[in-house]
Amino acid sequence: MRISPSQLALQRVDRATADVLTGAAVAIYTVGVGRVLLYGLIGEVTTVLGAGANNGSFQFNPTTGTTVAMCAALDILTDEAGTYYTFSGLRTAAMIESSSGAAPMGLMGTPVVLGIGQIEFLTTANVTGSISFQAWWMPLDDGATFVAA
Image 1 (spheres, rainbow, N blue to C red):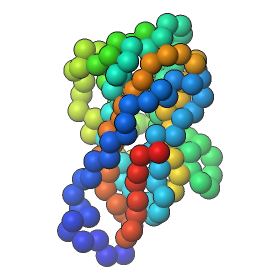
Image 2 (cartoon, helix red, strand yellow; image 1 turned 30 degrees about the horizontal axis):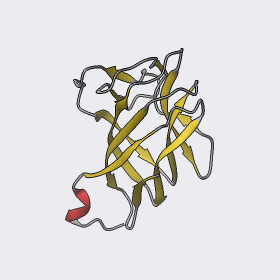
Image 3 (tube, one colour; image 1 turned 180 degrees about the vertical axis):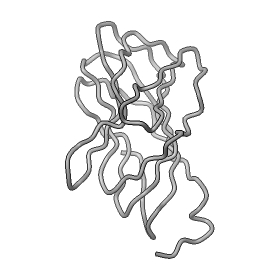
Image 4 (cartoon, one colour; image 1 turned 180 degrees about the horizontal axis):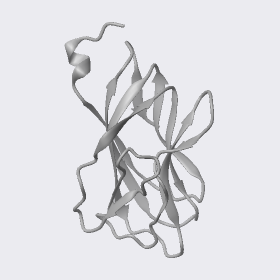
């Protein structure tokens, strides 16, 4: 594998705000070709989340293999606009939430290698609200792709 210098720079992919609070997994990013290294992921609540118990988390659903949690779930009920969600990169650590527009930078302490498949945002309740996302990644293979779903 030969990587050009331009491939060593982190790339950012934005996903427009949308209702991803369906009580199920919603694809937010797709790795379509090759492997990538995910360095960071931030979700930002843009419309207040509806009331009721609701756990949220990130997971990876590979094209081949079993879906795996990227972090442990966190209760996100009635989170206000400006709340950020991110995670450390450790699967056993809970999703990180920070209200009022202040959160640790979304670059993870432990980057994650992803094959072909989709990053999903998973919730346990279907409530109102909207979240936008930003991800930072780098290709590991020539021609690797990472796009908003």
